[in-house]
Image (cartoon, rainbow over all chains, first blue to last red; front, side):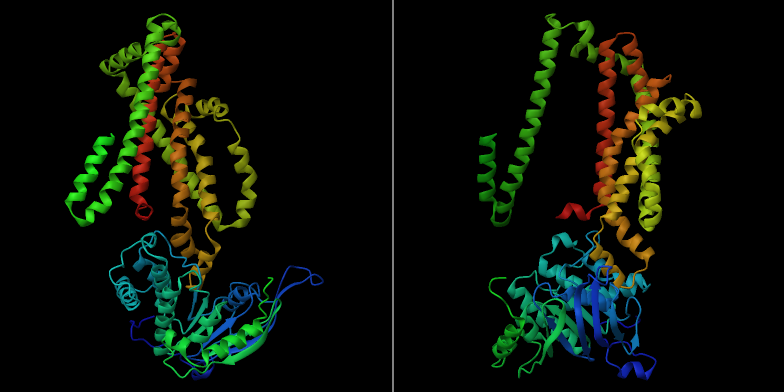
Length: 277
Length: 282
């Protein structure tokens, strides 16, 4: 919490073991809602995967496959039924540390200016006020919001609000970012620009990113790996290592890469998108 | 009206590029407001004129219904003898004190109930019971407990405010978006952080809606208290004039009461805009 961004590095942990361990390991995760075992509402049947340091992984799945539930499980916002979630080499109970979380809704606090929204997490962690403001300003500038620091969210566009939300997520310097459809509500152009900005920031700082999305193109253009979920109850149906021979921080270049459409077609096939549904 | 609007539009068109886009819109909005105000004044004047005419032509009993001119006469007299100022001061003070105590207490309890779901469930039937008591039924007890002076009226005003304030604040706290609470938790917020940085400011909208509502309730409480037993205040003036069948004086005191209510509501609205600047910008 003492560093000033940018440039910044993820936290150096005291123990070496934690540093070599992947930031997130999920093993045989299972989730049922409802109290009765004989009448289970099983949302997630069996999911295992690893998120490596500096890796961008996307999880795509059909609507209602329990993608958002999965994210809430990983964050410790919802208790899991079975399996383990290991953060930084240790099983965490409750809220994991050094993890940033962002949703489709920007969830900005309307009574705070853009800057004060960004510094919210720093405030909670007791960072001195001057450092808060400095880091908040740097983050907003970095995300192209120079001159909008003192605007209330109501005066900002959807794309700008989402940038502020992203800055707020980055302010705590998380090693791992968990994003749930962060750009789903934005128009295509804004989305591609924001995706590129995000890829640049995440890759240059060796952070890890887990993205949950229903947008296959977004998943392929952004990620090192795409995990495809089945219909509910969710299992892993396939995982693709994405290799596009282009600058991976340029989302338009990624879309024009020759292999791009092959990945898209393969993943669409696995999603079993049914026309009637 | 129309010709004036036309003139503004042409003027700004000649003015220059950027303001030309904005000003016609603003002026048409202002014109709308002006038109509404004009209609309101017309309605008031027509009603008063009809009333005056009806009583002057004796088709309406001036003794039972008073007349606008007589009401005005009593207003002037009340200003002259100083009773208007003292009565308004007393009732205003009772109302404000009750309003403040009731809202501070109610809002604090309402927000605090967010902290413990268990306690709020325990308390709920008691709140409903307290809220369902007609305020006038409490007046005799208030007078026995707090005497016939200022304190009993403040107590009445407080009682008519406190439950409403409690319920609106609690409702405001409960309707905070669960995703927003989760967002705070992922940033590492404790329950205390969530309360101070999210629940309280997020409830301000509801709290202020409650404040506007309870201005009137506090005034009702104070006036009822004065009706039951008092030696001064607007409620006292109304009650006394009513018992003596001086109807125009009843209306005169009523006019002052309405003016007081409007003033207090206006002040609350001003304070709201001052304290919640983010809601003005959109």
